[in-house]
Amino acid sequence: MDDDPHSDEEILEILKMKKVAVVGMSKNPDKAAHYVPKYLHDNGYDVTPVNPNADVIMKKQCYDEITDVPTDVDIVDVFRPSDQVMPIIKEAIKKKPKVIWLQEGIHNEEAEKLARDAGIDVVYNRCMLAEHRRLA
Image (cartoon, rainbow, N blue to C red; front, top):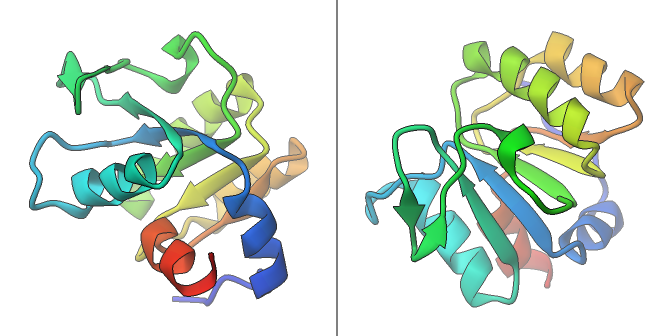
């Protein structure tokens, strides 16, 4: 898998954005899709869970789709397999986030191009928790 080309300075600028919707957030505390957003929440981020299989995660209202989130979103953080990213990115584009962040191991060039063509920056194959710990 390709490495994401963002510089440390660019990642630091992205990490300054605090409103994060997490697609595929898990109720299971042992999964990265739970402990990564929990870490972000514990470090001052406004985390909104997006998962159609849950009503509440971390005492926060959970939404079925990114377009159901009633507030503005800076970053859409995606915890879904690469082959499931396209419909998520199509939905996310409607929300007009500044960044779509595909977690470690997630990369879909076609979907990423769609987002970039809509003016949205895309980070792929990187973990927000690891990057925050490394740079912030």
